[in-house]
Amino acid sequence: MCHAHDAVRVDTGPRPLFDRRDRKQSKRLMGGIDALNGRIGRGTIAPAAAGIRQEWVTKFDMRSPRYTTRIGELPRVTA
Image (cartoon, rainbow, N blue to C red):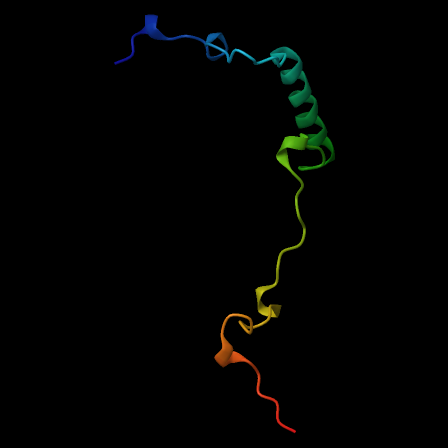
């Protein structure tokens, strides 16, 4: 059960001992990133921690059969 006097703001909770991030500056930066993405297009700019979007994927239909693991599946060659 939650009473009104139990409610606290999210930003007033305990912070990690070694947390050195400037919350106000981080909030401004994220607002700027959101504004640019809204104006230019989604995914135009992102924090480095988000990683790089890869446009390519492995095509499994082009991979080789299990020649290295199944001796019975080696191709037979006759001359």
